[in-house]
Image (tube, rainbow, N blue to C red; front, side):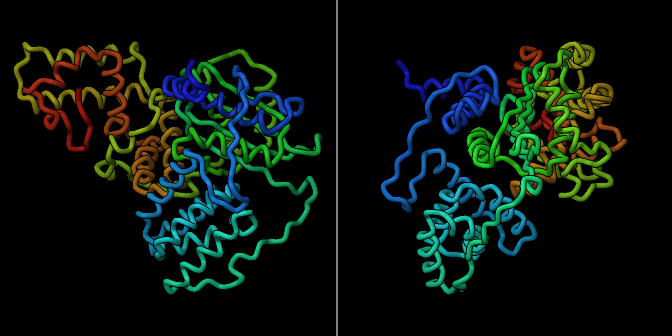
Length: 454
């Protein structure tokens, strides 16, 4: 019989969202009493989480997932410019991500100190306070010694831990995070002080099943539980962590999902979520990304910058797929252009196909659909920015600014490519032969803006 981990891996490969939910519940229900913590996510059974043993209190011993995450962080640091404008923001974002994970922070500092450099030393200074108050502070002293041997100056009081001050309930601060998990358009999680219960409310909301299912779960929580919850979700998140966002923005995401939801039947948890998030909703304010990136006044002039395939890689684009019904008239026009009776040069045929898709974009990516596309790429631009992926943030932002304005979207290369991908999804047989034909090589089917025609 397959092991539990093998069964989980199989389920994750076939349905990442369901597996992520299962894993989250397993982690959460192992850490708190079932009497005090109702399920946050529906329809799963609970299993014990594996015990991870360490030889000594201060020994750095990572799980396989943590080791993989460490390598990802090291790769990202390796391409950072310590003198660059975005480096400080990246370190701040990294610090937020590791603030509740001193073990991983200690492992990162240890690795960086073994090959001392300016980037590693800056990260050491930025992350040191996380490790200082943990059982792994011995590694901090060892790292400080290694850096000092290479000429970097480490002050004795660099990581003096801050005093812990107890605060009244009304002074407790809320927290909100966004996760990009396959199978959902996004997952919003918040921890909100609730005076009526003398503690916190943990709220989670996400869409599934092509907008047909809106899952909202509200439960009593704590800061410790929330940290464990974030860590469990981060395993399956694109970017390997949750993105800290303002509470008002989490409320905007909640009401956006409520608007995208195609269901009609409400339920108690949804109504409670609506009541909680409405306290922080500021509908007249623009999304958080507008505080992180300057608006592009004429994004159409920057379309040529966008690397479409690189931008869309690893995104769950099923949320943006056009239906077969709405594409049918445009598919018919494309088929007429590909008729063997029509003898025209391949370049002319490709140009006409592009014109059809641009016209389809103008007609189909309008109203609510255009708003959906806009919000999707606004959130992607924000997530890339917070993760330090400046180039991808720029590409997504170009697409989002075009969708947010009043300019035509027909020449938006991202929208055109998603239309073409939708056509190929619904009618794969019609384009397979053309794509494989030696008479229509891939270089002739790629436009100057990078759009790959069927």
